[in-house]
Length: 153
Image: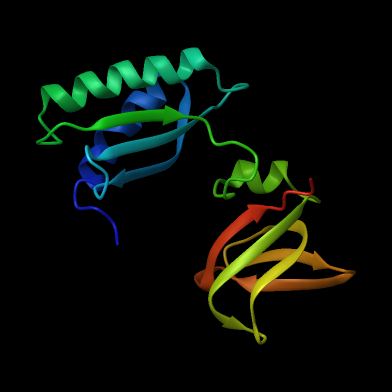
């Protein structure tokens, strides 16, 4: 379930990110923590995401949220870049990690499975495409819970 403050926070955060040439990859509000935690994962659109990118985003977002009193109580703001092993979500990630081993989890059973492992081939409007031991599988996007890079350590 999405927290009711997220649409307002997203509306404020998106223009700040764009101004800094950043993309918001994930945004979550962990209300069960004390104090609550607002976590924003960002990516630099023109290169590696730096600590400076995180600091600038943090400073501008915190100032704007506090000025507009969007979050009515004390909170912790965490700005970071998504690391390897995180869920793939953007078109850029699906292109960048083509051929990499991934795990696709589904919300409901598809062909008697809820988890698929294979090499990422891409995605389109309808499906996530992976190569499972030489067999191409198209998993319908509407049932995909997450696509995660497989950690082969």
